[in-house]
Image 1 (cartoon, rainbow, N blue to C red):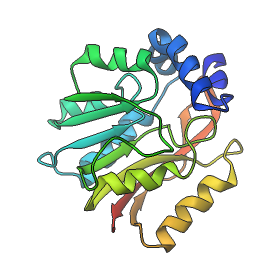
Image 2: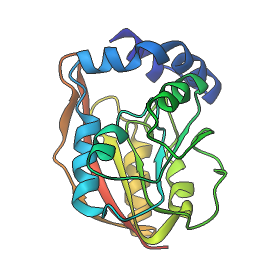
Image 3: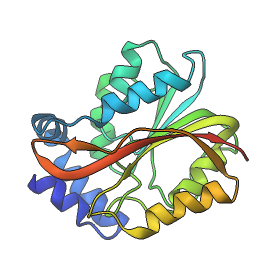
Length: 206
C-alpha cells in the first residue's frame, strides 16, 4: 500500500500532516480494501473494559473516525477527537460522531486539563513515522486515575525498539497496569501483510 508506506516514511509532524492531508479523501477506502482490522479489534477491547456510561472519551490520532464508528453503534458517546491533519479531521467532522475535534500532534503537551478523560484510545498512531514513544506520557496525564488507556502497538520488523522499551518502562514506573493484551495479529492482511499489531488495555495509575 503505497500511501501507507509514504505515511510511515514521514520523519516530522509537518511531513506526516502533509501526507495525511493529501491522503484524507482516499484513506478509508484504501485501508478497508486492504482488510484493515484495527478499528473493530479496538472497539471490542473498549467494549470489554469501558462502560458505556464512561465519559468523556478521547480518540487520540482519530483520523477520519473509523475506530469510533463501531463504538458509536454500540452506544458510546462523549468523544473528543484529536489529530494533526485538518484534512482527516474534516472527514471525521462529516460523520457527526464527535462532540469536539482538536487539531494537535501527539508527542508534546496536549490542550486538555489533567484527568479529563474517563478513557483514551489511540489506534495505529504511536508508531514509527507517526508519533514518538513519549506521546504516551501526556495521554496518561489527561486520563483519569483508574481510567483506561487502550492503544495499538506494532510487533513486527518495522517496529523500533524504543516503543516497546517505553511501554515496559511506563509499566515498571507505575504509570499504568496492563490488564489485557491481544495476541499479535495481521493489521492489514491483504494490503500490508507485514504490519502486525497487538491491542493493549491499561489501567491508568497516576
